[in-house]
Structures are given as structure tokens and as C-alpha cells.
Amino acid sequence: MLDIQTFDARRGGNVLYKALTHPLAAEAIASMAADVAARGSLAVFDPEGIAPALYALHPQMPVPAEYYVQDVDRLDSTLCGIAARPVTDLPHSKAATLVLAAFDAARLKARLAHVAPPGLHIESLDAARLPESLLTNKRSYLDRLNFATNHAFFRDRDGLSTRLVSANYWAGYGARGVTLWLRLFDGDGAMLATWTEALPEGAGGFSIDSAAVRARFALPPFAGQIFIHAVGVAGHDVVKYALDTYGTGGEPSLSVTHDANAWPSDRYAGLPAPRDDEEVTLWVQNSHAAPIPAGAIVLDRMGSEQPAPLMRTVAPYASMAIDVAEILPGLRWPAQIELRTGRHVVRPRYEVRRAGRTRIAHVNVERADLRPDPGIKGLHNLLGRGYLLPFPVLPPAQFRTILQPNPMAESQANLPVRLDVFGADGTLVAQRFLGCLPRNHNLAMDLDDIATTAGHAELVYDFRDGGEADGWLHGLFRYEHRLSGHAAETSFGAHIFNTAMTYRDEPQSYNGPPPGLSTRLFLKLGQGARRSFAVLIYAASAPWHAQSATVLQLIGSDGVAIAEEKLTVACCGSVMVFPDEVFGRALLQQAGAGGYVLVRDATCRLFGYHGLMDDAGGFSLDHMFGF
Image 1 (tube, rainbow, N blue to C red):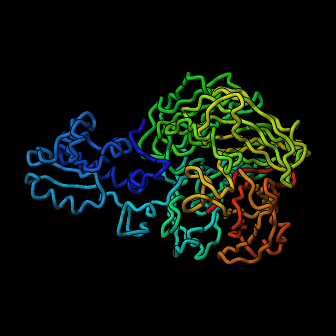
Image 2: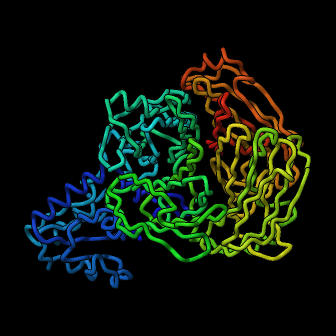
Image 3: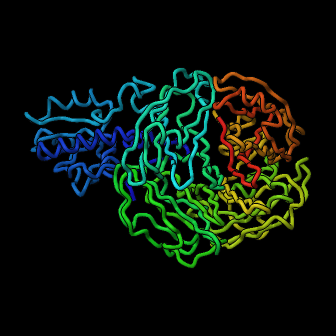
């Protein structure tokens, strides 16, 4: 496992991790490593404990002959097997080069210069700083806004293209002149193209289409990843997007998935085993400049503790398609697969191929830091039903809806859950206790016999047969078109919704402390003959406003509102929205290629799912993102 710290639930993402893994920083560190090796022996001074991560992410760095620290509590630490020494020993160094494992190190370098032995060359990680043109805050290098970055699966081959869609939501926080720095890698990890794009000055939408990129740079077919760095941002340091996969030239596939998680994790869960008529492909995409060693990627049936390693090396920035049946032969749906990645990849994608159609989705972070929370069993009645995981029930005459609860924390031994089903008007139409499910359960519930009308359902905790809870309740939701056979799936986790009272960090807010009692959701427009749609769900843990006060704003490519329409959603209810029906095709054309619908509500928190539909029974579905 990589010796790195990435994401902490309380403090957010580790900026240092992003600073060390940016492709331009990786190039600079590789150059520095070569220069250091040419000079001779190396000493490393590690005042902040950064060096282990530096070496984990950049193993080409020469093994140090000397390792210095200044914190007395770290005198028992080692780096590459070299025991730490106090920095007071630096005057006796025999090294040719001293590398300071720190950014913004000018003062530190000056303090050491007078005690360093003559001829000792001093370097620092400032040699790996990004160009000033890529910094949002030039005064403080490790400011989180300097590293508003993310990765995206990006493919244009075999009749399948990808389209990344988002908006300049940073403009809503006062940002001006936002640009994207983009680098595309092919499946082998080779750089295909690097370019920049200016975003609309207002909060307009934008898209990056693989077919357009391929044509612009005269590229061969590819299946790799794109690295995205937003510069000049405000408010958010995460690049959020929706990623469409669509077929061309008669390929009928249509799918959508959410943004990557930006930080790698030890484990991921929610990867489905294939049905007999399916092939499930896991896309292992190396997020770093260091290769992933053979055996570092491991698959295991959830709860079995019989891990099976992938005995192949994945090159830096490479993307490898793995047939999960090759690693876990004979395993079939509804079994679930746990993925262990050693922190080498950000949120991986998986692809399901069936009957000539492909659908793509993502697995979710399996938390290592969570433990069962006894407080959830005894939540105050002001929080009502507590944690809810809402998902759509699409019109049953056209679609099957299938639910599978997913363990999503290493400590989860069981899932005590119930299903609550609601009509579109907010009426509770059915309940079913699903049991205190073991970690290795085989439940995949078809809602045909319980949900007879369109609306939504919620997975909730129910302790009637015992069990434990940690608030990280997840599920996979699969939808199948009854006539076309097209399918889509999505997954998400539970939250407390729409209560004025709070519990820990719930109800979560898009920005700021809880409670989150407002809505700002992004809904893209259609693509050619494919119509966009959303299912907006007014989930409520306890009684809240009887009706929402929702506003749909049609935003043009320049970020200016063109039109708006009001709608109401009943508490515990839902509504299906088609932008072309709400605003008409003429206004959608006026909005342009970068247009979108902003779903706003100042009275309640709505949860949403979005996608595209075509006339041949193709559709996509995933959860929406907010800002």
C-alpha cells in the first residue's frame, strides 16, 4: 500500500497529495531525481513528514544515504530503511545533495545554509512547483484552490465516445477568468495531448467531447484518462462533472457516470459480479507517475476474505481493462466484489456488457476510519427516520427497478435495513423489512412486487433484528428497460434530509456547516436526439415543508438565466422533469451547447438523479451533483 495520506473525512483532501501527483510536478520531480543521482550521495531533510509520500509516489528518487528530522518524536522513524538523525547532525553530512522535503522552502533553505558543510548542494520541492500561470493563490502554494483537480475516464474507440459536462460553478463564488489545464493519456499511459480551455466568464456550462478532442489533435483511437486542473477558482476545490458514454455509428450504448473522487482510497465496494449473460470489466486507471506493482490490485467477494490479486503491472497513468471473471471465475450476480487498490487509483469505473450494449458506473469509497455508531440506534425523535438513501422508482410499465444494499466500510459486519416506498405525491405505499443482512449477503431485490407506480424508495436503518450502523449506508440501483433490454445503474450513500436539528455533520450542506436545507443541482441539456431528464426527490427524515418551492432556471452558455419555471414537490414525494417539456425546444436551442438547468430551492434539500433518453429505449441514469 502506498504510504500516503489522501482524504480525511473531517479535514477534506490532502493538498500535499495533489501537489505531489500533478503530472507537471511528476515531470519536475523526475528531472530533479536524475540531477540528484548524477551528483552523488543524497541526504533528505524532512521537517514535516513529507518524505515517505514523496518516495512512495516517486520511487525513482535515489535512496538517501542520510535522513534528517527536526521533531524529536520522529527520531525513531526511517526512510527507505535509513534511520532518522537529528538535523543538528547536518554539519557532519557527507552527502553531495540535500533535498528539503518541503514546499515554500526559501526560509528553511536560508536557515540551513550557514550550518551545511561547504559544497553541499541544497534543493527543495520548490523545484516541482507548478508554473505561476496555473496557480490560483500565488502567495500560498499549498492552498487547496491551487489544486482544483480531478481525473476522468476518457475514451473514443470501438464506436464509443465520452462527453464530460459541467459548469463554471466557481463563477457563482466570485471567480473570474477560470481556465482548464487538460492532459490526455492513452491506455498505455503515454501523453496524447495537453491544452487549455477558457470557461465562460459567468456560470455557463461547458463540455469536453472525446470525438472533438480526437479530431482536434488528429489522435488515434484511445481509451485512457484525462487530467483536469481548474485555475482561477473560488469556493470549491473539486472538479465536479457528469460523464456520458454514447454510441456512434449504430452502437446503441448510452450511459452516464459521476465525477471521480479526486483522492485514492485503500478499498472500494459496490462492484457487481456478472450475470451469466454479462461481462463486467473493471477499469484500473493508474492515477500516479509510479507504476502499480503486480499483486497490488486485489479483488475479493465481499465478506469472503479470500483475496485474488491482479498479477500484472500497470504503468504510470495507464488504463487497464480487467475482466473480473478472469480474477474471480465462477462468481455471479448478485454477489458483490470488494476492490483493494493500495491507494493507487482514484474512484475506479466498471463497465457491464450485455446484449450488445454497454453501461458504465463507478464503485464507491469503502471507509477504513468508520466504526459502528451506537448513537444512530437511539437518534432523537426530532430526527425522525434518520439516515435515508433515496432512489427513483421509474415508471414500472417501462422499467424494472432493482435494489442491492452495499457494505461500504471495512468494519461493517451487517446491514439492518428496511425499504420504504413512496408515490410521487409523497404517500407511503409500501414498507418491507429486508433483514439484518450479513456482510456477504446475496440480496438483489426486484421492486416489481412492491412498487406498482412511479415514485421513489428509500433504504433506511431498521434495528428490529439487531445489527449496527455507522451512517455510511450505500446501495446499488439497477434499472432495465422492459422492451429494449437497455440497462443503467447508479449507487450512492445515505444522509439525514430536511431537519432543522443536526446530528454530527448531517444534514450535509453543499457549502458550509449543516444543516443543508437548500438545493442547487446541475441538470445538463440533451445531446442531439437524446432528451435529458431528472428525477427530483424530496426526501425528508422528519416532517418539513408540505411542498417544495422549487425553481428550474434555464442557463445559457454565457451563464445568464434565459427563463425559469416553478414547480412543487410533495414532502416525501418526487417528480420527473424533462427540460424540453418545461422550456420548449426553442429556448433550449437558445441556451446553446453550454446551456443547462439549475435546480434551485431555498426551502428544502432535494436529491436528484439525471440522465438521457432516446427513442429506441436507450437511457442513462446517475445521481446529480450540486454546488
